[in-house]
Image 1 (spheres, rainbow over the protein chains, first blue to last red):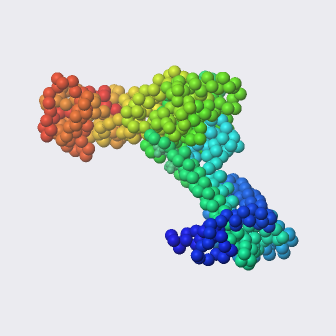
Image 2: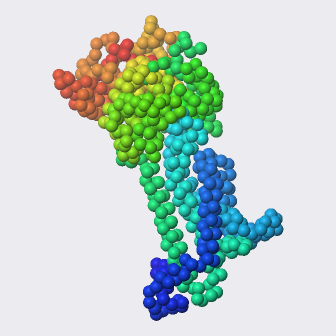
Image 3: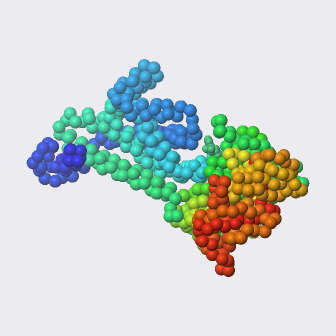
Length: 252
Length: 363
Ligand SMILES: Nc1ncnc2c1ncn2[C@@H]1O[C@H](COP(=O)(O)OP(=O)(O)OP(=O)(O)O)[C@@H](O)[C@H]1O
Ligand SMILES: [Mg+2]
C-alpha cells in the first residue's frame, strides 16, 4: 500500500513546499504554487482543451454504448461475443501502437489535420470498453419482465425505453460518463501522438517538466487533478451501488 | 364470430416451438367470458408459454388465437385487451405505488382527476389505500402482489393473465390471497386466466381448469368434475390422491364392466364400448374407501389387506394398507368424528367401496 500510494502522496506534499526543488528537507508551507497556477494562461488553455475533449468523448462514447449495451443484453444476437471482443480491443492493444496506427490512418488515409477532434475521437475508442462494461452490468442487473410489463400496460418500444429502461439505466449512464471522462482526462500517449497545435493537460504537463522551476506548479496542478479524479471515481461508485440497491426486491 | 359461443378467448390448434422442442403442442380450447380459468400442470409443461402467447410476448409457431373475436396474429402486447400479473410482479423500482398503478393510464387521455380517482379506486380494491406514496422497495411480498394486481386491473382489461402470482408468498398469506383473489374476480367480473402448478390452489379458485402435460391439454373441466371424473391416469394422479388398480376387462355388463386385477375382481361403471381383455385402470379416491374388520356385504368391491402405517392429519386419518399382489399400498382416508373404532397398525382389515364410486381409466 505504501509503495502504491506513497509516491502519489509526495506530489501534494511538495506542492505546498516553499521551494522550487522537490527535495527533503521541506521548507515552509505555501500556497504560492497554486496561485501561480491560476495565472498561467498556457496551462489554463490546456486545461480547457482537456475538459472539452473529456466532456465530448465521454458523451459520445456513452451515447454510442447505450443502444449497443441494450442490444447485447436484450437480444441474443449472433456474434455478440465477437462484438464484445472487438470493442474491448483498445484495452489490450498498447496505446503506442494504437496511437501510431491512428496517426497513420488520420494523416495518410483520411488526410485530416491533427486537432482536438482527433484526440477526442481516439478517446472515444478507448472509453467505449469502459462504458460498455458499466452499462451492460447495469442492464443485466434488472428484471427483464419490467420492460415486458411496460409493453403489457400499453406502451410501445420507444416509450418503454423512455419510461423504464432509461430511468433504470440512469445510474449506469452517469457512472459511465464519469468513468469515460476520467479516462480521457488522464490519457497521455494518444493525446501526445495525435495533438496538433493545441494539446491537452497531460501533454502540456509533460512539456513543462523540462523546466525545473515549473515543477512545483505542475505538482500543484497534479494534486488538484488527483483530487478531482478521486472525487469523480468515488461518485461513480456511489451511484453504481445506489443503483444496485434500488433494484433489489426489498423485504419479502 | 364469437357472439354465439361467448368465448372471450379462442385458442385454435396452437403450437409453440423453441427449436425442436414443442413447449405448447397443438392446443385448442375456449375461455368463457367472466370465468376464472386455470392452467394447471407440472413445471415445464408449457403453462407460461401459453399465457405469454395470450399476452403477446410470444407468437404461436402454428395455429391461431382470437381474443374477443379478433385474430391476435401480429397484434403486439401493448395493443391487446389483456393485462398480466407477472410471477416476479415486475413492480417498477423507480416509481412509487401510485405511479406504478397509474402507469398504464398515461395514454388513455383521461383527465388528471379521472386518473387519480381510478388509481385510488384500484388501490382501494386491493386494500392498499393510503399506500400510494410508498416507494416500491418499501413493500412486502404480499403488498407487491397487490400493487401488481391493481396496476393491471386499473386498465380494465377484457382478460387478466396471472402467472403463478401466489407462488412467492408463504402458505398462510397465500391462502388469504386465494380467497381475496376469488372475491376480487367476482366483484370486477373480468375473465381471469390463472397459471399454477398447485392443484389445491387451482381446485379452490377456478370455475374451470385445463390440466396440461408436456405441452398438451389433457382435460378441461370444472373443479369438482375434474376431481370426480378424471379422463386419464395422468390427470387422476396429478389431482389429489388416487388409488389405481391395473387390470384387464373380464366381462362387459349393462353400464358397467368387471375387471380382473392381481388384487381381485372388481366392478366399475362404464358405458362406452370396450373390448374384453383391454388393459385398463380402476381408480378410486382414498376417502371413498371404507375399512372394516368383518367381511363386507356382497355387492361391494372388497379386498383384504394389512394396515402398515397410519397418519393423523387433524380432521382425518390416513391409513396405508398393503394388498397382496399390489406393488403400492392402498391409501384410505377416514374422517375423524370421535365415534369410530380405533384400528391398530399391523392388523388385517377389509377395504371396501361401492362399485359406482370407482372410475375406469382407459388411458
Ligand atoms: N424462450 C425459450 N427458449 C427455449 N425454450 C423455452 C423458452 N421458454 C420456455 N422454454 C421451454 O419450454 C418448455 C415450457 O416452458 P414454460 O415456461 O412454458 O413451462 P411452465 O409450465 O410455465 O413451467 P413452470 O411451472 O416451471 O413455470 C420448457 O421445457 C422450457 O424449457
Ligand atoms: Mg411458468
